Each structure stands twice: as C-alpha cells, then as structure tokens.
Length: 245
Image (tube, rainbow, N blue to C red; front, top):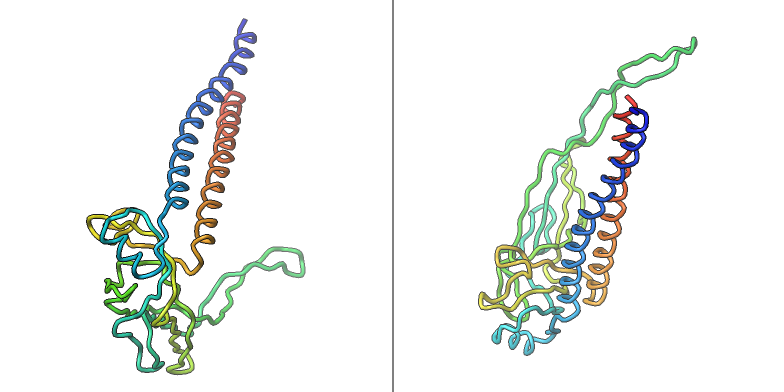
C-alpha cells in the first residue's frame, strides 16, 4: 500500500508544482507583456519635435510624450590644465604601477601538484576627478546638465606623471547632436519616468533608438519564459532528489 501511495505522490506532487508555477508564470508574463505594450505605444506614438518652433510649441502646450534631435551645447566648457581643450564633461583617472603577488599551481617532475608565490606588475586604480558643466543649451533653452544622462565619455589621452603614475582622461565633447524622449508636462521638460529621473539621451536616430528598445523588450520576455521553465524543472528535480534521499 505504501508503494502505491509513493508512486501516486511521485505523480501528483510534480503536477501540482507544474500547475502552480504555470499559473504564477502566466500572471507574471501578463504583467511583463502589459508593461511592454505600454512602452511600445509610448515609443511609437511620441510626437516628433525636431525643430525649435515645434519643440517650443510642444513644451508650451504640454503635449506629453515627444522626441527630438538637437544639438547639446556646453555653457562654459570645462577641462584639465594638462590636456587643454574644452569639454562638456571630463574625467581624470589616476593609476599607479605596483607590484602584486599571487599563488599559482604547477605540476612537478613527479606529477605532484605544488603551489608557489610569484610576483607581477599591474596598473592599479587610485581614484578619479570629474569636471562637468553646470548648464547645457538645447533648442536655445538652458537646462541643468544633470537633467540629462547617458553621455558617453571618449578616451582623450594618457599623461605620465612618472614611470609608475599615470592619468588617463575621458571626455564628452562640448557640442553633440543627440536624440531624447521626454515628457512635456505642467512641470516643463521632464523624464518619461517622472520629474525625479534624468532624461536619457541617445547617440542614434530615433528609429534606431526605438528599434533597440523594442528588441530589448522582446528579449526580456523570452528570458523570463526560459527562466520560468528552468525554475519549474529545478523545483521538480529538487522534489525527486529529496524523496530519493
């Protein structure tokens, strides 16, 4: 009688696990899809406002979600004395060339595994300094630089203070042509995620920007489905493992 009960349990418990994880998975997938559809609608229905006149109109009349391509121009560009030039943002990263030790394994002549300590040299990060502008101009409007995010700093140069100390510089040019999606609300220009978030800028055209966002949404959905299947299999395997031990 116990053997029959055990066999029934081996069938019923996995079925219960599959049923529960499937129901929960359907609910989670539904929520994810709902958010993805809303995001897609936002990207696809955003108002284009590429020229200053349209941009001003969208802001003045609080048209909601829109996108634009515009020059970003630094007000009072910044730099470091050692490199010159003018930048919207510049970062100086200091590194020191230092000796390190590590333990490595090797096989000796008798075939035995041994360990030894060896030394090596590497550049070690010692911190960084950042300078950035306070204001930028977009469609002749002046905004706080921190109102935006996503600027991509490019390598400028490396300066050696000595044979074992160097500073590498990365900078954002003082003028860029960028794309961004934003919300023209009663609070003025703000992020689509709310007034407390920064507006994300993109270096690509809007159609490429949207294509990237949509593909990421599909990928996240696929990964969730795969993850849920793996979770279900893992739970069933765990149950059988516990029962057999």
